[in-house]
Amino acid sequence: MAGAAIIAAERVSKRFGSNQVLTRVSLAVAEREVVCVVGPSGSGKTTLLRCLALLEEPSEGQVTMNGSVIAKPGADAAVRRAARAVRPDIGMVFQHFNLWPHMSVLENIIEAPIRVKEMPKTEAITAAERLLEKVGLVDKRDAYPARLSGGQQQRVAIARALAMSPKVMLFDEPTSALDPELRREVLVVMRQLATEGMTMMVVTHEMNFARNVGSRLAFMDHGEIVEEGVPAQFFAAPKTERARRFLQLFEDD
Image (cartoon, rainbow, N blue to C red; front, side, top):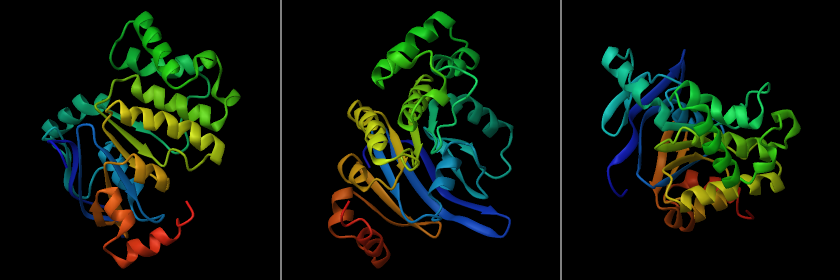
């Protein structure tokens, strides 16, 4: 990994009751890296991402951003303050879009910059229009989510996350709810962000994206990182039998 970590999980474990979902997971993302997290369903990928996004509190370990602790079990006031300070710097794109249905596309994008960053409305609108141009949806600024395809909704969700000018973007299987044609729409936008140097962690089943866009890859199974390295090495010669069996499912991908 090149450079210092922007965001990192450090020996993070997560339990829900008696269910151990993550076990001492350590994974960091440096500036301009695209770290892809792959593995079978139920391996803890989404939970790891949610811990990094401050949506779940670790049961053990800690999450850091630029070296400061922003999450740990029973966080004290200092950690909570640190978390509030960096929350706008962490963009999150969910599997199921999570757009506000009663708001237009434009309203979805400008809501957080105005409310959280206290950005003047005219400035927020100008920035939102630039982002809609980036994701190819300028003509949908006044449409409501119900009138958009799934691919369009996910591109709006990406624009909404980018509106906060985050330092890192977290993607939780952003194409898994889409059919192949709509998946391509979203992947084109994500590839462009990677080309522009956006720091990204992507939980995905899109093996071609992980192979061709990812700068580093982590393979998870049963709540642990089983294998980690550059995508070319992982796809050409995985080190573990579990990873080899997993990749066999995507031989025709």
